Amino acid sequence: MKWVRKNIENLSPYVAGKPIEETKRQLGLRRVIKLASNENPFGPSPKAVSAIQKVIGNINRYPDSNNYYLKQSLAKHYNLKSQNFVIGNGSDELIDIIIKTFVNEDENIITSETTFVEYQIIATINNRQVFTVPLKDFRYDLNGLRKKVNSKTKIIFIANPNNPTGTYVNKNELENFLTALPEHALVVLDEAYDTFIDVKDYPTGISYLDKPVITLKTFSKAYGLSGLRVGYCIADEKFTQYMEKTRQPFNVNMLAQVGAEAALSDKLFLKKTRTLTLEGKYYLYQQLERLGLAYVKSVTNFILVDVGRDCWEVFQELLKEGVIVRDMKQYNLNTHIRVTIGTAEENAYFIKKLEKVLLAKKG
Ligand SMILES: *Cc1c(COP(=O)(O)O)cnc(C)c1O
Image (cartoon, rainbow, N blue to C red; front, side, top):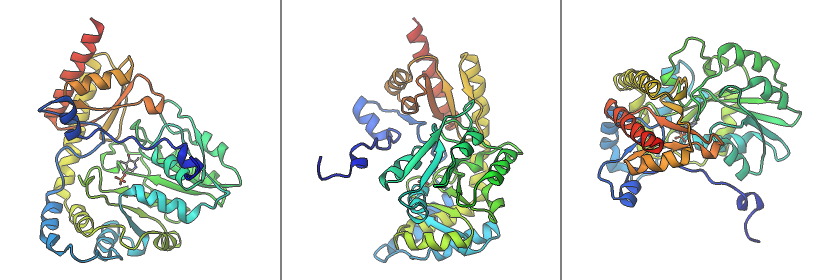
């Protein structure tokens, strides 16, 4: 097609988790549970909901272009300065802003082969070259990444923990990696799942503000605000000041700013989410073992499971039973599904249906 740019014509677009309403409509189901997008199954932060209700009558006005109050709250929360933050319409937008701000047309980006696909999609849309490195034992191979770095490498994206595997890069690995990098390379650490970490050697990017490191965080997962679209990055002001130039003036809507600020202070909700998610994780581990299924140990709110047969078929069969998961065909993990840890009831329902689907296949 002569009108469209070549890289858009050839682009494989992002495949989102199947929505609940669409599934009900298409399959004529009354009950559908969604364990496909790593959302918070316990709802949004109640503090966020009531804060939004208070300002909803003001939406005839533009939102605050400076995100003043949200940045103030974040600065206080992390004991940093407002200037250390850039707010985005989800961290997806910040990935775009980072690439637009820092990567010249002849420079490249490096990431893992099996990771959050938005790094590659957004880089391609922006006409930037991406090199990928295979995982090792379902984990980021930082030595492999370092070997790919050349004189034109500008950014290395590391999802830590990684989606869709649930594994993490530890402190030692990250520090060795940072030390070995050439001066022209920037590291982006995407910490979308940091709330669920239950290990001691996890390194947060915030400890490396003196290095060329940008940390991404989101309100979409543990805070329960996927539908609002708010994420932020934390970095030295020498980086954030230019990202501020690149972003759209009203990229974060009014309800998102207010909701995120309230959610940030909702310690009770966050604690409940974390505790119940960890309980759900151990329950699912135990049940998957009972079913004789291999899975990858996770530090997140989702688990990568090897169902031992074609994952697209298992996905379809589960869908008919009213359970939406994610098949991993897109990642060439042909027998794996990714399942989000749900409420206790949802987890039990998922296991019951998975068992049914797998037994039916056997017979
Ligand atoms: C879910 C997710 C995000 C969040 O994106 P938002 O745009 O903030 O909703 C970012 N990175 C990874 C690795 C994720 O899994």
